[in-house]
Length: 169
Image (cartoon, rainbow, N blue to C red; front, top):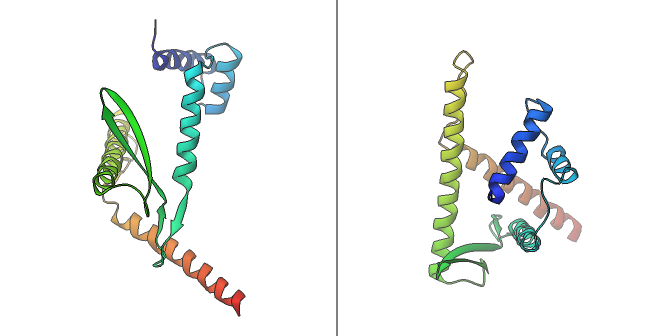
């Protein structure tokens, strides 16, 4: 029997063939898959969906410190214990241990590096596949991107602080 990932890929390939589209809208595919019995949720799917929704909610929980730095309030650490992956969440200001904070940082960096590696590999393949087009670029130095976002965040925070002072009179 095919794994769930293999089942999704088979369904995706079937939908691609059926539509002959150059790009596919995710929502259209999901609708088609549900209507054509390509997927039925299993009891563990409900639990998995709940975990994803909780994770998304916690990732969006932001705080701003006294310097105007916006940060995620909750941090996640995945630990392998007796062959099982356990996910722990801690409050960045009041929870966790030094070891958990270091693991969270390392795991976050590893995830970013994996995303960058995959994105750069995709771009390299596009350049190989379409050699007559102007080469696609994917610079690996994100320093400028970070500074731009930090400046934008700081400006928003300062505007909010000014508005709050104005309201107080």
